Amino acid sequence: MGKLRGSDFVSIKDFSPKDLQKIIVFSLDLKKKEKAGEKTKILQGKSLALVFEKPSTRTRISFEVGMYQLWGHAVVLEGAFEREDVKDVAKTLSRYVDGIVIRTFGHEKVIKLAEAATVPVINGLSDLLHPCQAMADVLTMFEQKGDVSKLTVAYVGDGNNVCNSLINAADVFNFKLKLAIPEGYDPKVTSKNASIVRDPAEAVKGADVVYADVWASMGQEKEKEKRKKIFAPYQVNAKLMKAAKPDAIFLHCLPAHRGEEVMPEVIDGPQSKVFDQAENRLHVQKAILALLLAA
Image (cartoon, rainbow, N blue to C red; front, side, top):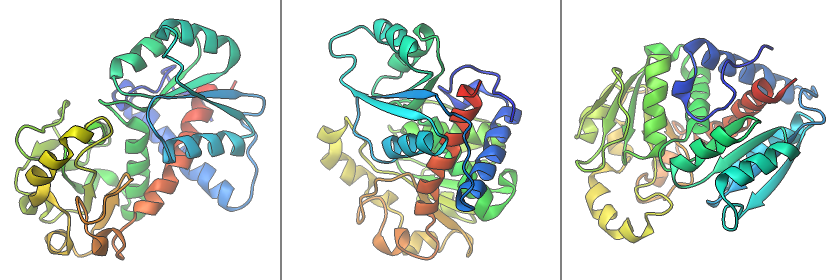
C-alpha cells in the first residue's frame, strides 16, 4: 500500500503527482473491494476526530462511514474552538486519536491545527480549499473519461474553494481547465493549465466536463441576492450544455440549488454524474485515511 510523503492532507499542492496518483489507484481498489463485499481492516483500532465549524452532509457521512468500512472509529466534535485555542485542541486531540479532519471557515485555522497536532490533519473544507472534493472529482473524471490529462474541463460560477482546489488538481493532473467566472469573483490560486474565460459559452465550447457550484457559499448568505443577479448569465442549462462535447458529463460538488446555478434538466439528466461524484468522496477519503493513518 505504501505511505504518502506528507503527514497532513491540507492541499493538493502539498503532494507530488505520484502521491496523488497513488490515492486515485488505491481509491479504485478500495471501491472495487467494497462493491464485492470484501472487508478491509486497514484501520482496525484507529480513531479519527471530525471537527466541524460548518454544516456537513457528504463530508461527515463519508468520513464516518469510511472509517467504519476500514474498521476504524470516528468521533464528531462541534464547537471545539469556542472555548479553547486551536493549538490546545490540536495537542489534546493528538493524545486521543490517530487523525483529525477539520471543516471550517478560515484556512489559517487548518494550518494552525496541522502545525500543532502530532497526528495527521485532513482539510475537510476551508474557505480557501476543498482538496478532498477535488480528488473525488478527478476520480470521477477518470472513471467516466479515462486519462484525465487529455480532458478539457469547464468550470462555470464562483471562484470559490472548490474552484481553487480544482485549479490545483489541473496543475498536478495536467488537464486543461477553462473558468467562466464574472469579474470580481476570480479564484485565489492560479495554474499554467487554467485560464479565465468570462463568457460561459466560450468556456464550455468543446469541453469534456462541465462543472458548476453554488453562487453563494456558506458564510456568504448576506450576498445571496446580489450574487443571483451577477451570476444569472452563468447558469448551466440545456442550451449551455449543448456547447460542450455531445458526450460531456456534468459535475457539481453538491448541495445544488436547482433553478439557480444549474437547471433540473441538466443535474437530473443523463449527462449528470453528480451522485457518482458524491459517492467517490467516500472512496477517495478512505484511500487518504488509509495512506496517512495506517501503521
